[in-house]
Image 1 (tube, helix red, strand yellow):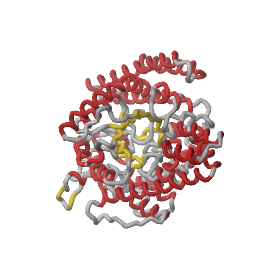
Image 2 (tube, helix red, strand yellow; image 1 turned 120 degrees about the vertical axis):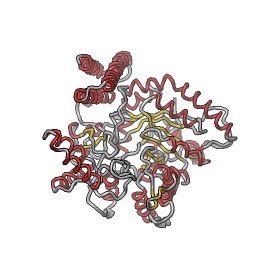
Image 3 (cartoon, one colour; image 1 turned 180 degrees about the vertical axis):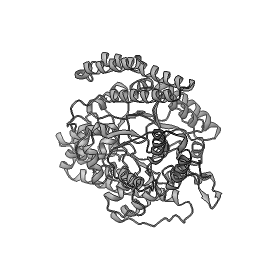
Image 4 (cartoon, one colour; image 1 turned 60 degrees about the horizontal axis):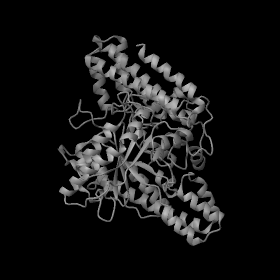
Length: 595
């Protein structure tokens, strides 16, 4: 079956900087990507940089202006939209004028693309320019310029000591900035539910369908399992809001923050989505129609379009194709490998070299995030160097100019970031007071727990500034990078065309031998997670912990049985690896049942 979409992959959000300008780099080629709209200061600087580069009008939006955060986000997204539309038109003109350009472009597309078929027909049969123009008009569209909002990173704002209305909260202002932009695109909601933010969507007409048009602004939910998708999809439908895409991400085998499930493995989760896709559509459609009718808005007679996608650890063309065909997915997210593609992502040279040389043991799930959520990173970052230098000088912690993660209320009523020097100073003073009651080992452990937090707001933004040789003010923070474990198997910088060819099986960029299957790699990480939880139970053996531990183990064992059947019965994929995979599954099963 041929698809009209240009590509069967997308580039998910990565950090604050790494995909901040990815649409400018790749959207005109039909590749969709996601911008983080958390850091309005970075977006303001990127707006100025790209406005000057493409000779577009620019007007500074300072922090002294009313609603500056929302306005900065709108301004930058409009600039990106403008640049992408211009580059897209230039590419279309080039295709109309140059057959070699048509050939080169067609060669980047997947074999299942209808556009590729029609372009090859044009070239092979020497068809007219009118034919080419009609094909491009029907199938050739830019990639989507989507944005990401971490729903619970919704810091309140104050005027002096007076708290401002909720619409000035960080996530609310980011949503408003997106809603008021010129984009015809989606907002990716991640990191759980925020009922107040969900209610705020109702303030914007462009999230609702009309008689003649689908919503101009759409909603993508990043979810870890079917139950979460159903609950959130129904919640939004009750407000008259349709989820156009459910983006399933591996709980552990991913980049950035890792949100472990209770042992539900990715393959099993995808199987449930495959089985219950129609149920998800029908139940949310019914709730949507009821809500729209009550709001006296247009009510669609059939469900609005919906896609289901997945991401997390995918690294080979076979894995990519397997997900599309076996689980009937619409697109696959390829994140970390694109960090080695300068044409697609914004990464400074030093960090890109660090990633290219990173081995499996260099990539780890850390506790450096001030959010208190496990965070994937790599050893040897410049941020870690600066942080350790301050600890040695007895001056731990960071300055906190952005305060996006100033969400902890342990010491300050308006919140502080746990990486903030002021926060750590108080926490360490309390630890010192209690030193007599702790063993040397316990004291060192708690000291490490306090001081290991990194300033993600600056660390995740600096790469773009370094790449573009823009000045960096304030305390030196270096770069924090958040790749998934999959980056260990990509060992060199790649061009955009090389990475696309790798995804579609026309090239192979992986030189590493014995790379584990991505589903088995996630299982391995979950077994390690189980062992960690087991150690926590031994330190504090409560009924709640043992129930959680047993559920985690039972779900993992159920997932292993599912994989044993899957890899035994599927005759098309991973044929050469079946024996190894079955052996690995048995070993993990034995490890879990022997406890």
